[in-house]
Image (cartoon, rainbow, N blue to C red; front, side, top):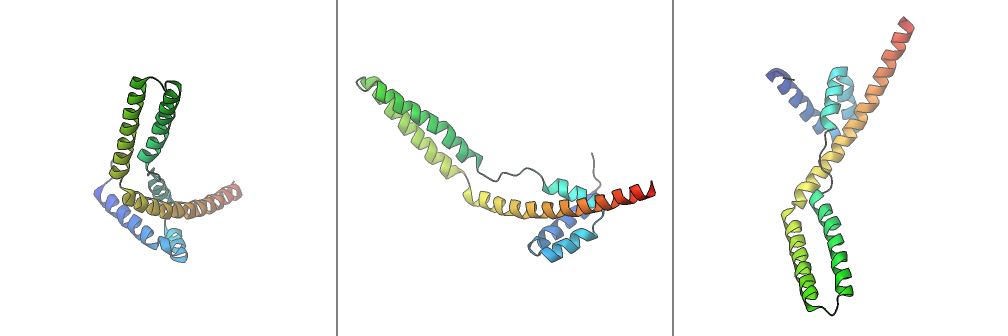
Length: 148
């Protein structure tokens, strides 16, 4: 689906004004109530996009390497007398620790916290849009039933 340049500019201006008004509930409600139904649906679809809230890499690190760490402890406990297995387990443990440190250093935690803050603001806007859309759809349904 292609969007014309004027529609794109108008929509980006709409998004920027709504996001600026998101801190004040009264202004946000006024601004959203002025919008047409199509604009509300388009704005809701745009702001409901998928953005990461949690750093996926840290979660992946915790799940995978906790399993590996438990496996290493199990093998060390079973083969305590075997020096080769013990040295392999120690080397693997050091590798897991280094990989964990590198993962923590690579993940931009400040960026994720900024994205999380914005996501909360967007979620609040989407909730207000859903309430307005429900009211408008209900009003249109009543008018359709009365006209039927």
